Length: 207
Length: 207
DNA sequence: CTTACTGTACCAACCGGACGGTACACCACC
DNA sequence: GGTGGTGTACCGTCCGGTTGGTACAGTAAG
Image 1: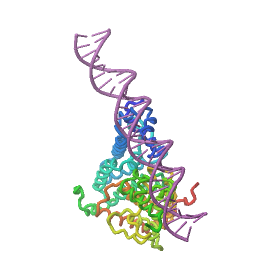
Image 2: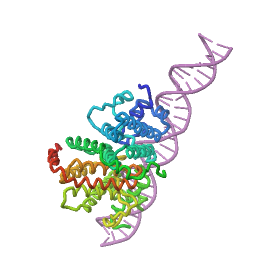
Image 3: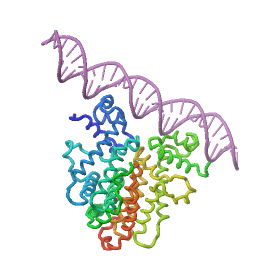
Image 4: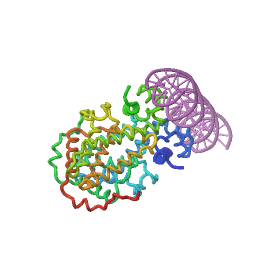
């Protein structure tokens, strides 16, 4: 059905979770959704944990790619702005998704489905996410803008994303747009090249 | 063992989740943790869903109570500030928890454990959370300050809370404090009594 | 005797995963 | 060009363990 069986299985799993919840992520159900047998599924992913690991890693890689797409290098705050745009784009509903260029248009992106599966199944599988966040936080803090503003923007993006992870009502519309543009403004805080150097470098935490 | 068996079961369930993850929330395990038999457990909660419902409702009620504790009425932004303080207090690690006054000091609060259980088990059980957020968002938007700032603060709090739900590294310390006080400053935005009225009231959304 | 509750025994459903096969494409060697 | 061999992709069944939930017998208190 597809060039890459692995990817289509991952897509099927993601769709299954977003349609029926993480609890329904069973090998049988994934196999059915991906139009193959359980044996076939286990040929590609040697265990359920392995499948979830694939989901999580793909999610992180996808978001990284998204950020890179949105990066307009040069000015201070570029990375933070890209993070913001990527987060909005990923969690935005109903709008046209623009993302159809990558991987041949999988339909719905993985969004946060993998996280949900990992949380409920085996929190240890979230390690790639934790590692990604360490990287992201570092990028934010050395983005040429006030790290306080950058961090607030990051946290708010995460809040947006949590919101659709647990299915909260989205922020109502005139407000939502205003919130996003206020956040974007925060990434161009001209002040505070002082404040930036105020913080000791934690580039090298004792891990 | 306790005055209120129900509450002690809830506490046991919460502790179990935070120690071993949501997947390990089984009736047998909860019964063992609460020092009673499965039969006894099912006498108090007629099903697993019922137990999780209890967890979620207690969580929401606890957070509401926390917000009320922190409310210092009078000035604009009071509610938003209370939300911020409650969120910080709930997610803060290691610090003294101050909360020992309520409910006789249960040890660790439920924090987000109930959410994790609900997400993985039956997303429908999150309904009380959704309802609570509708309320909270409304309070934020009519708090006498710029609703854009208020919403950003809320989202960032949610991000903080997501952070410890999935076990990310906390924001490193000099930054964390700065972030919190910047957010608090955002709740006292003297400007924008204009902007407040800029947004049409969505007090009465269609459903 | 009733109410409130506990503990044990048990069951049916479900789930992960192992396993033995199958189909087929490709290559090598005579 | 036929024969044997090998690796890849996939299928479907079976099994043991776990889980949510039920049935029931018991007990302590009033």
